[in-house]
Amino acid sequence: MAFMRKSALPVLVLFLAYYYSTHDGFRPEMLQGKKVIVTGASKGIGREMAYHLANMGAHVVLTARSKEALHKVASRCLDLGAASAHYIAGTMEDMAFAEQFVAEAGKLMGGLDMLILNHITNSSMTLFHGDISAVRRNMEVNFFSYVVLSVAALPMLRESHGSIAVVSSVAGKIAQPLIAPYSASKFALDGFFSSIRSEHAVAKVNVSITLCVLGLIDTDTAMEATSGVFTGIPSRKEDCALEIIKGTALRQEEVYYDSSRWTSLLLGNPGRRIMEFFSLQKYNLDKFVRN
Image 1 (cartoon, rainbow, N blue to C red):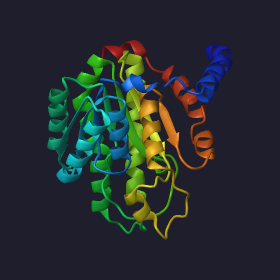
Image 2 (cartoon, rainbow, N blue to C red):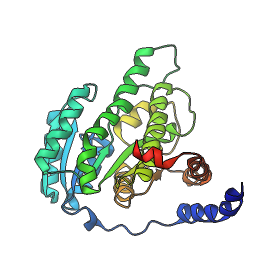
Image 3 (cartoon, one colour):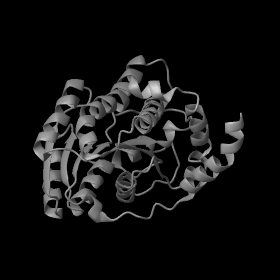
Image 4 (tube, rainbow, N blue to C red):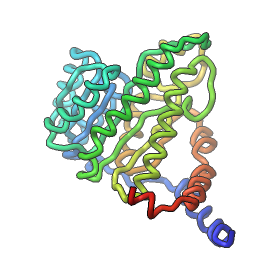
């Protein structure tokens, strides 16, 4: 209790300072020559991230289901100035492909500095009526494949002191109707990767994890899915893509991008981090690290 009383105020000040910092230190040259994987890169936010990375002179390996669309994106990346641009088509429903893709991407680039996990499975907005297969598909593609990809990439990222970007959603922070399977997969991303980030801090693993919490973005897929159902104001995918790259390069724990200025204030408050800090004091960390 004495420790709690003595440390509570400085810890609160520390977290408030962290939360309200501006994170304005990004420079495009941070990505020059970096080796980056982008999943879900054939359209939408993933495609825009590929283009931004190309403009910054990064090496990129892209993946999605459509070989034809990936070819066009990779060609455009080369036109924009990418150090190199490759693509490997496949589905993240196949966990063997996910693991093999990372290995092949590492060979193509000679390593890996940044893993951007952005893909999702198609889903519609509807009331949940017991469709277990939809829940399973969302969890496998939107969550489990992210785990498989990150595990496969971790040895290379440890070597480069690299970064992982996990593209999530406001629906992974608050309950929303009509998207229960999707929301479950996004909540799972927060739980898993936030826990892994904590383990990295304790075990001194210099690989950052940035959870990207997005509101409605004006991708074709999102606009079609929400048409006539959700009246939120969409944000531009080009700007969203850049903010994901910036936050990941700056090794931020979370990036919030939404049309409402209240989203980051209300969902990104430091209360959770303060509780996580004090919860960690209850662990025998020496034993934790050894194991």
